[in-house]
Each structure stands twice: as structure tokens, then as C-alpha cells.
Length: 204
Image 1 (cartoon, one colour):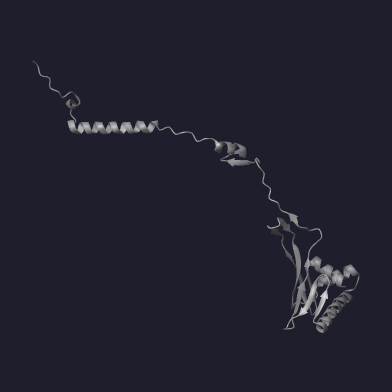
Image 2: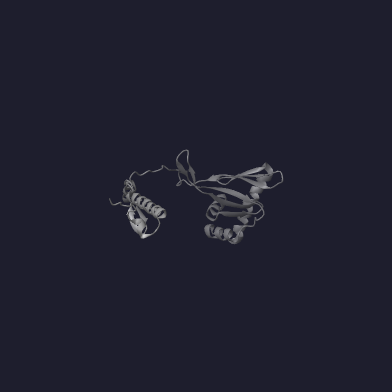
């Protein structure tokens, strides 16, 4: 019965036993071991919850289908198994269930489970080496057009063209000319004659 109930627990992740409680199977996800450069596979562990200790209808139906027992015989088998665990627990203070863990009673009389870690043989650590690909080419979207990474690298590696400052010099000269003309007319006045030659020619 021990192996049969363990099989049900693995398949359904939950098993309720009279007087013991509900044993649950929980999943711990895979971990990345940076130091050893590998992924540690996920593992499973058991926990016990007191209170709900009534065997489920699903358990009894499963026992009937897998062993050929009647529902009454299935319920009696579960009760007898739980009673055996409880008897040993009260007499010795602890009882071991292979593949599940050690059941103990604390100072308050509550049942605690020192569970075993469950790991499957097919799940082994996997190497996690960082792969760096040199000159790996891929496509990127530039605006609405696709460009390869090599094309974009070539584009950004081109030398920046030198700026032409000729137009700046032309603007400065024009500005100075306008200032000179303004100053000239402010000194000579804005009459037409001020633009001509103001030197007086004397006749002999």
C-alpha cells in the first residue's frame, strides 16, 4: 500500500491521510548556477498540511481501478495504513516513509514532515556557457527598410564629412558691408548727393 499511495501522490500532487493530514508535492524551478556555469534542474519536495485529512473520492476511485478492490476495501486500506503510521509515531516519536520523508511530532503534538527531495533521473544539470559570435550578421529595421548589421556597421564607420564654412564667411562679410553702408549714410545723410564725390574742384 505504501508504494501504491506514493504513486498516487506523485501523479496527483496531493494525498490526504486520516489522522496525518494532506501531503502535497511542490515544484521548485530550475536555477542558474553562475559559479559553475550550469543550470540546475528543477526538483520537487513534499510538505504536510494538518487539518484536511479525509481521503478524497479521487483517491478511492483510483485505488479501486488500479487494484481491483471495492470502495469499502480501498477506504479500509487507507485507514489501516494511516493507523500504522500513527501507532509508530506515538510509540517512537517518529516514523519513516521511504521516498517521502520522516514524520515527527513537535512539542505541541503537531505532525511535521522532514521531506526528501525528489529529482528525476532524466533531469541532469546542463552546461550554460555564454556564446559570443564574432561578426554575426542579422537584419535590423531602419525606418521602413531592412538593413543588415554589416551594412549599418559600415555606415557608422564612415568618416564624418568635413563641414563647409564658406557660407558663414559670406554671411559675415555681407553683415559687415551692411553695417558699413548704414554707418556711411548716417554720417553723410540720406540725400542723393551724399553718395557722390563731395570734394570741391577749384578752377584756376
